[in-house]
Image 1: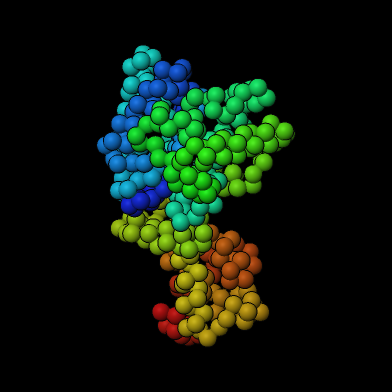
Image 2: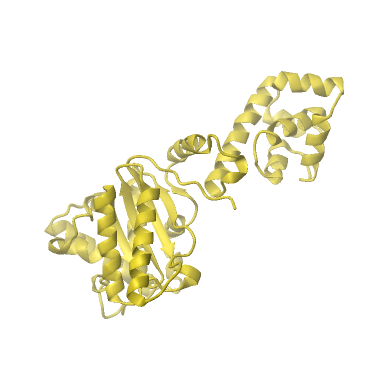
Length: 333
């Protein structure tokens, strides 16, 4: 089965999420949570990772993680397999603890907005899930999050760094800045308490859970270029996922621009041409045989009508002996 690619590079920042197998618990009690944090600290010592924030819930966890070296995959393999072994020994269990592969959403390191969104999303998880009394208790009363350590630096683990999150909110890691952060987060908790749809309260929260990267368009473009190196020497079908989908579309757009230029066409003139004209058939053949973009995308971009036309046009051009088709193929190539 095709697997999603893991994009690794020095100083990358990820929102890492992982759930229990079949939705089951990965923390049975507080001792398990202590065990996980101990294992996470050991992983940081082994890899040089920096944790910016985290939260442990019943059947999943979230970590905002920075990798000074390109070692997310090896570090996560050690973290999850080691914790699984320790969990199984403690509870006399065996087999998988986590559900499939963890998710790692890349965060634009130059965007303070997105960094602040993800960190707030992580720290406010216990409030959205109503894991404490939102009316009578404080967010810091939920112990299994990095948030209490933001307010009490004396108990902060060495591998937890708070400066970047606080600086994104224009405050410092001092008494005044921590007080402001506490009031800010309690205000967000109050908003959640008064909302009937707390998970939809902030439209940016959905972005921090879904997709494959979170950042400006220039950041996304750099990641798509980085995928070229990952895919080198691998079959097109060996990798899948939204990042590969975006990469393929970008590659197809580049081929389309190259072919239009070679044929002396523009997107506007292409749109006005008949859907089965030789030029469109050749364009379909040129892009379809060099990328794995969906037929629907080709139809929309090349104005070819029904998706069923794509294979028909590709086959026709591949076997064509018509002089006009052959001339158009030579001009593109």
